[in-house]
Structure formats: structure tokens, C-alpha cells
Amino acid sequence: MRNYRLYILYISLGLCLLFLPTFLFAQAKGFTVVIDAGHGGHDPGAVGKISKEKNINLNVALKLGKQIQQNCPDVRVIYTRKKDVFIPLDRRAQIANDAKADLFISIHTNALAKNRTAQGASTWTLGLAKSDDNLEVAKRENSVILYESDYQTRYAGFNPNSAESYIIFEFMQDKYMSQSVHLASLVQQQFKQTCKRQDRGVHQAGFLVLKASAMPSILVELGFISTPAEERYLNTEAGTTSLANGIYRAFLTYKREQEIRLNGSSNTIIPPADPAEETISEAEDPAPKQETRPQVKKSNDSSSPVFKIQILISNKPLAKNDRQFKGLKNVEYYHEGKYYKYTYGASTDYNQVLRTKRSIASKFKDAFIIAFKNGEKTDVNAAIREFKQKRNK
Image (cartoon, rainbow, N blue to C red; front, side, top):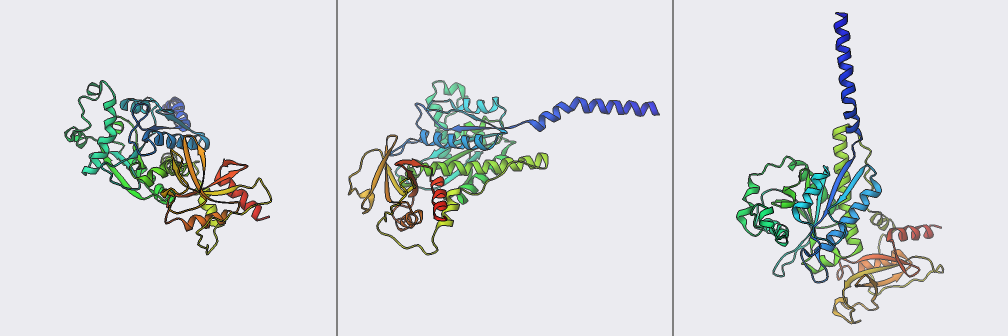
């Protein structure tokens, strides 16, 4: 009997040693996310009056990836593209599959035809489109394959413009559906609460890029490039940064939940909402005065940040009395890339500029505050912190 017990003990120890490396590997395994900037190269995606979808997508994708890389050392970030190049649709999913990614996030910008307008962000998962509008979104995104010379062979005769082709999605069983829908819901929650975007909800449609990915996958539509106000927002530093931050916070929440589910605990920390928004609320006066003209306040310290309100951008210079200024006087501009970016008001007093911004909100609802230091554009969050520090001295 004693020998039998020893035999069982040896076998048990052997099995533990056998599976120990696997267990340690599972514990040490990092998290991989693939970020897909939709379109690129000779495929511009949707085209607005001042921009192209491919550039908006890439801008947000790179900002999202940078956030993750800077704050999550245990996460490997892989991009399907990091510059303006064309990547076939099936290749994007293959990149994620080859990397054995834990998540696939495809970033896009929506559009409507025939001068129709709409606002807000939406997030999509794989499935059968339940409405004509949803089908149209899938058709537009899947039409990327028409840029590929051998698309009929590569996609087994799939015609992105034929409703009949989408019947295949009715019979698909996606084992990652619940996880994908949950991540999509987290993204929409952040778009609504953190980014203050109109919530257009979570939807399903037959996206080829999601069909071929073997992990939880979502496709984000940041906004409508076909709506002038939306397009302006999607081409601002504040807009793209806010959207990237919203997706990042949703990613952190998803990752933390997964780690708790698998390991019982998580080291992933979800930071508070955007620092600029928090600082703004602390700096606001309880009863701000309404302003009709910008007030310029000089500081004895020439190095103090100067706050301004960016109201619009243009790819060409505008006359001082241009109707796009909606009657505002003393509008200024600065160059950034190929764009003229117009500002209103200038002050070293952040509260003063904030009140001015409120006074023009009915005319420029997408306006936002930026900062300059020594004549150069600087990080507005750092400028606000500096303003508060000097004010409290």
C-alpha cells in the first residue's frame, strides 16, 4: 500500500512538473491588440470637403496605439498600417490572426450620400445587418476590395454591392460575438460619457475584415465626414485625441475585466477622465459672464501660456469678413500642416477664455481651447496646470 501511495505521489509530481512551464507561460503571456486604420494609399475611403477618411483613421489609430504603448508595458501593439499605404482587406485580418491577437480594433469614419447629414459615433460587430442603413455601412466598407485586381478570386465571388452576397452572414456562428459586443458597448459608453459624443449605439453588419479575424473584433465609426461640423471636429487635435482616449479607456476596461475573470485580479489601472475636462470644471467660475468680444489679458511673465479658442479650419486663407466667422471680429489664424486654423480670443487667464468659449457656443459648438507658449502651440493640459499653479501662488 505504501509503495502504491509513493507511486501516486511520484506521478502527481511528474504531472505538475510537466505542466508547470505551460502554467508559467500562461501567467506570463502578454496581451496583444491589433489596431487597423481603415483604407489607405490609393483607397481614400469617404471623402469630405477638407479631408479624407484614410487620414482621420490613421491619426486616431496612431494616437490610440501610442496611449497603449506608453501606459501598458504588458501589451503588444500591432498596426495593420502606420503610414498612408494600401493594405488588402483580407491581409488586415491575417495580420491579427498571425499575431494570435487578443483583440482586433478597426477604425473608420462614416459618411452619408446625397448631402444627408448625421452626427455621432457608432461601434459595429460582425453579424447580419438588420436594416438597410446598416447594410449600406457594410457595403461602403467592404467596397474596399474593388481596389484589388483579383478580388473575385480572393473573396470567393463576393460582391460588396449586392445584397444577396450578405446572406452568408445569416448563417455564421461567431464564437467571439459576446466579447465583441461587450467591447463595442464599452467603446460607446466612453464615446458618450468621456468624449461627449452623440451615441449612435452598437450595431451588427457583414464586414469582411471582421469575418476573417479569429478573435474578438470591432469596427468603430468615429463620426460623419459628410457632415461639415463633424468633419471639422474629426480634423482637430482635440477631436482625434478625445476619440482615441475614449477607445483607449474602453480597451483598459475590457482588459481589466478579462484579467479578473481569468486570474482573479488585475494590475490594469483605469485613469480618471481626461485631465483637461477635470481641470476645466475646477477652474470654471460658478456664474460665468456672457461675452460677445474676446478679452485679452496680458501677463507680466511673457512665458505664461496664452489660451485661444479654435473655431474652424480651412485648406485656404479666409477673408476677415468671411461668413464662416459668423460675425466674429478679431479672428486670427495659425498654420498647421497644410491647414489654416482660425482662433478667437487670446488671454493668459484660462477662465476668461473659457467664458468667451461659452458665449460663442451657439455659433461654434465644436470650438475648443488650445494653448500657445512663447509663440509655439503647446499641450493645453500642461498649460492649464501651469495656469492653476501660478494662480494659487
